[in-house]
Image 1: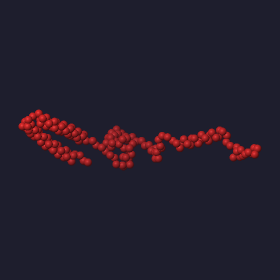
Image 2: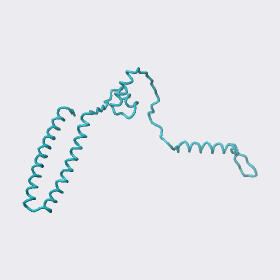
Image 3: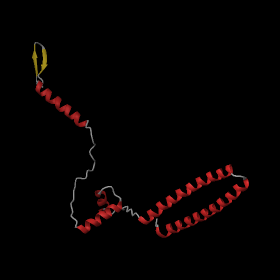
Image 4: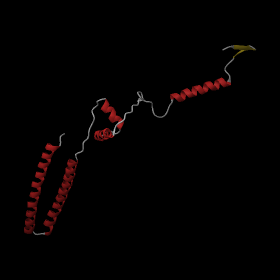
Length: 168
């Protein structure tokens, strides 16, 4: 910068006010750029797009495979298919589902029977004499043994069904 000497004092000729303001604006804009808010940019953004067309039969097959895969969107499904990554295919067997729902209902009924069993035993002991209570409890014990045998048969059939039809 050139300097002027006036009365023994030197003064530097500087930038005008307008130049100072523009440099201040540039500095503030640089600060704003370094202090960005919002979403951080991806290091490797997916900028390339490909389109393809399917006929009706191919579309239905594609949709079926997509639904079976359980992927959350079609892009992920297509990428995994193209690049030979392992696709997770979920097949829901309606018969097995129905079997397990009914088995669950049956189990809840068994729990209800067990709860009622305890209530009946307490009521019989409280309200009847020893001889009458023993005869009623004997009948109840016979019915309980039948339920135990039935439960064992159900367990055996369930294990056989799992071995034969459910491949894990």
